[in-house]
Image 1 (cartoon, rainbow, N blue to C red):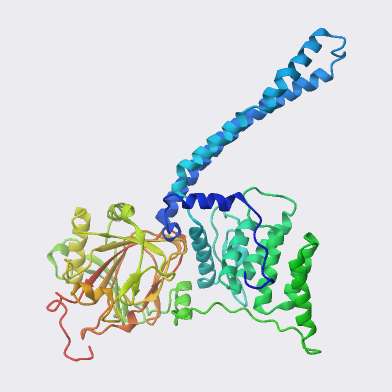
Image 2 (cartoon, helix red, strand yellow; image 1 turned 180 degrees about the vertical axis):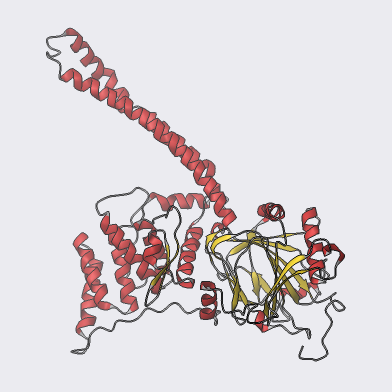
Length: 546
């Protein structure tokens, strides 16, 4: 925790022990990085819920027996005459004291019921998330909070509301908003605190303190946090953010609940000393909280603005070259069923193909990929690695796995005029985004000759053909940052663009991002086509600058 001003350690709880036990078993790592894994977690909790339902039924049955026994004994003591006068009452009294009370007190039924519940838990333990999953989910909520300027108080109430300096705008309200508990907010604030991210820890801990106040005196078995802990973490967050006076007020409030806590008392003394040493008339400086620096993301504001809107791409009314058409690409496969083509950008050239796949084809592709999903990686120097700026899982499908995949390759080749067979193109990559799933601004083509993309000796990624395999309710657009437009998720629609210019150089205007998904389950399929093998299909231009 750092210095002795840091918060108290959490009180002893069974939950860390259960997490440790779970870590000894095989687990679904990176569960938060794919909504398909989240869906599997839903099934796991439904199984646990069934075990808990049975436990409650059995416990109610046991308690009913105890209530009946209590009422029987109580009635005997309210009889008109005593066991001294009635031999039957005397007999039943002695029998109860000799055996019945012992049978009730030492009944194993309660132990058997709880053991059955524990056995049910053990059966699904291998499918439970680990602490890193909960941490990843907390970071996902913070990401949504940032990218879409969401109000934390709204998130706590289960609604998605954008806040600005002048107004609040309701973005989305589920039919049944899921409200968060005080402990939910506390754990998110603690994740941010542990990262020394006080920009996020303070609003979440503020909500935790408010909710803990509302339920103070009640103890919920499932909770790990408490009002005292939330006050402690919040006070130190304000101290680290430079707001000493507020840290002092919160620490004083803490002592109202735990007056014998010497560490917090020492913190108060330290805060008072800092304020005392301030020059006379110089009020404590209120420091405006700043978002943590994101060194790898220089285009954050542009990117987030495009995620919140649909950019400023010209329409066909402003530019006659932006148009929709039925396109055969002069290919015999498309003569009887032309593609619905829409040009949405000229620089770079970005084309949409509506209804490129059918619902059944999209579902088949997802079903084929689901068993093979693994955490997506990004190029990192000469290697590939997982990264916080890409939260998804992906799988690769060969065209031999199913006729639909082979037919898809044929269709992509027909509309692009390119050779999409290996090794001139990569296998079909199917991606399922996770909780707050996103992919921050990046190029699809390699920007260094040391990139793993060059190991195949088939050149760089010439073009991208991306297919939306699902709809989402909110978020998830593909934002082209420098071109200043974004393409919303429309199921069965494909997006095509050139990554390289005709001279083989990367087109910087293709910098793009997958915006975080707020509501929905986003699936896409990517086909990356390399420049080797396309020499006569997309030849060089007349100018070296083309």
